[in-house]
Image (tube, rainbow, N blue to C red; front, side):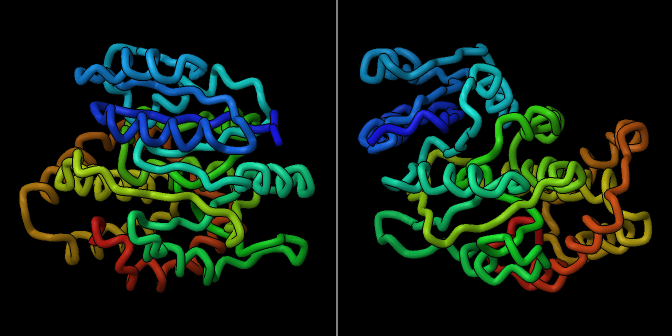
Length: 298
């Protein structure tokens, strides 16, 4: 089986071995998807290793670390109607790309399909899966799975045209909860976001990561999204809640300082979500407040 409907996009930075493992898995998929890799300025020989071991992969080398914008760069090369994201330490299960494409073919109002995440090497479900499966977001009766308020870039297939029309990932957010702003804008454009329990992606977390920096970006980006898209009263309450609940350390202080420094940009770019989209997000408040899977933002 081959399936020409979906291209897989991967971003990487100094994770050569993990990326090669991911590309091996993708090359073995029955769908035989086209793959585009953006090497975000790696210095560990990633690009030469990809060119040597996976010559069919489209390799982009911007020369610096673009973060999530590396995905935007890759999507410019995509000619298929759907684009599947995965990280350099994750890979799609056989048949899941075709299954996601079938859903998108059948339901033209669906913009994103997020898969179940299995944590390797144990093969256990990621803690976020339960939240996705039990999402309280109300959706139309025809939606073939739970409606979502956001998506996980490492486990989602999107309509290429919808991604481009929404502007892709915002360059300021870089990495760390960067999906939330794009997801809200997709919903504002009229797209439904959904979870599909019968689709699977595997994730074997890389040891090459800066958890404190990721938490800083997660807090900062949560603040920016809240200030950019949520009503003023809610934005104030959410900001105060984060200030009370995040760890009291330099990472959190840096996050708030970076967020506050960009207030002129926030004011220029602020665009409150339509009431129906805001109502969907309000249903997620209790889950997000109590979530253990979102502990990096408090």
